[in-house]
Image 1: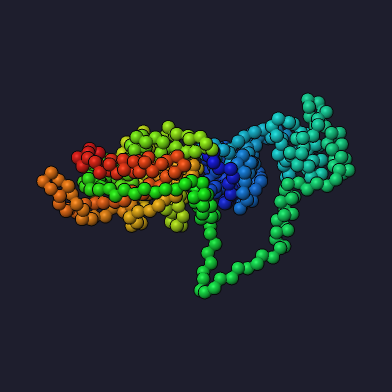
Image 2 (image 1 turned 180 degrees about the horizontal axis):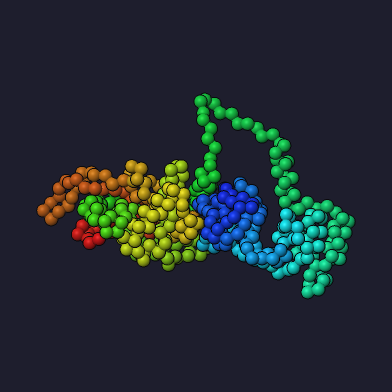
Length: 424
């Protein structure tokens, strides 16, 4: 699920126990603090068991379901364990398993140890978990757990003091919390109470943590983007015909930001304790508003290796998939710098909050026609120009005012010097 993801919430089981599953067909839908996504099956088979319920929060690496594939004998049937793994995308891990002779009640076992049906039946009857079974000493042939081994363990359990397992402790704590009354809050006046959804709570937590982590400073520059506007209006139809994608202002802003990041590589970094990690890859996060009112930040990977058409395709694809809920976990990982186009909502400027662990973020304001003073060799004159504000928030722990201000000015310089005769 990506290096920063430690847990996921099961939103929905697409398949139920007993359902047939085809390869690449979705088994369940999960949610992380980054994105909602589907977990597909890498094999065809039958869903044998769900190990967690909808709404459960599961740690990365935990097995969440068992899929039985065809071709296995009763005692050596091949099973597939569906797991949320810490990789670029959800994976499905396969391993050998031994099924009990009673097919109505199957017990999962580890690949590195064989258990006879008799041992499995005793374990099931005595409520011995698989982790407990795997810890037993084994004196049987080939290092197997024998009937004698498990019966001696059962006897020891009976004589040992009862110790609550972590699961029992959690359950007991939950029961204790449930029976304690919670004081209802009262609000004066005519108030509608709306409970935050999961994504909004995560956004709130992340923003507060970012403000508490980084020393935020924001610099502003007003930029004359008249050449940019003229060029886009001139080529947008031809651009769409040639590349089958729209050319908006966002790809043009990103192109200028990428050029400035090459000039000021320290802005493309992060902090680890007292170490500054200068990122060699330039991955641009693109803040995108969702229909729900929430915000998500898909990432254009290696933006410095893309031409303008490539950036435009990435921008449109990621934005469309974000709004339709079809982003994959890898689509929102690895950003080294973020841009937020607040001008989309008619805002002229903003003070964006840094996306951790990055050290800077830029907000691009609305482009508005304004009367401005134009300096010419023949003297100053007043003209109508397309103007916009760039707002650059940066972490003052490593980005000082000189660097932060020079960076946003360099972005403005690239936008203002845009070639109106540029070929598409």
